[in-house]
Image 1 (spheres, rainbow, N blue to C red):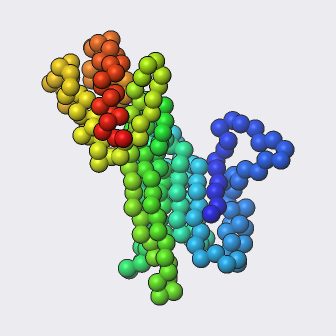
Image 2 (spheres, one colour):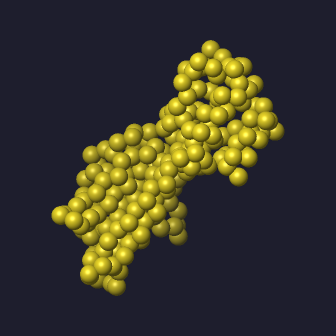
Length: 219
């Protein structure tokens, strides 16, 4: 397992700390050293990309290809705070490499569009006939952030349940009648399309019985 970052978000690296920066010269040496050891697979975790962009940029794509060419099997990215695509390098029936460009957010206090969820990756690597095989399952989630008793709470909701759970909240109160609910663009506090009801909407979202429904369904 190797990991690299484009930077440290402005936090200085002090004496005694080690941060692996994205530097292809040093990255190549580390990968070569790993391949000379007893490793059978290499997974690279990358802190890269542009925040809030749902597609990888040219640098991410170039680095992904470079890592696979050097011997990395799996590349998993973070930093954009939104989900980005998964790409596969295939030759005939074999998958030679997988890149998850961005996992998005698991738990977050962000309110920008598409930042209210993310991916988990369940990856199984196994050897068959002298080759590495992959089985990968993605587990997507959304984050619900209500205020309860004056405190912000965070609930991670599995995507298969997100529409049912969050849509049921909208159905509980007449203020939401006539509006189309889409959990993928859902904002915990104020859906943009109901901006005219801003104050009334806040009142509804602060009602305790609404949050009891959430607790009951996902507990």
